[in-house]
Length: 180
Image (cartoon, rainbow, N blue to C red):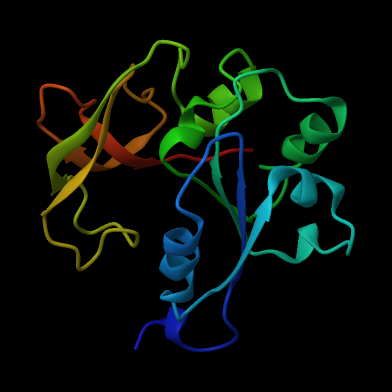
């Protein structure tokens, strides 16, 4: 049993907004993760922090896509990322948020995030680049059907975990990096 299986479940803020998605399927995805407590919320609610619990989350997952610069309140909330040991996960189209904001570039490791081509409905063979990493330990390669993105690859400060060799996809599919 891993240490993740014992003790209290990590509390995860799942931040959405700026892009439509299948809400019931997304909720079911996180409800199926029985070893975490996921709190799905719109970016505005996470930023407002009405219950004053933002600091109590163990990690924040972003599944949002905002193309304009963040307002002052959002900027201040996001600037808090990297000032603690809390995890930050940026999923799918959230990589493209705030394309001209240097902080989000530091979070994602992607330079020139405004440069994008995508192709929906692609079958992508996912490969494990770092099989011994805690995030990918125990995973085997798998096919997935999803949008393929062509953007610049993550910078050298990133450790690539998952890759694909697909003509319409960037090579790196998942990576990790330190922030702050």
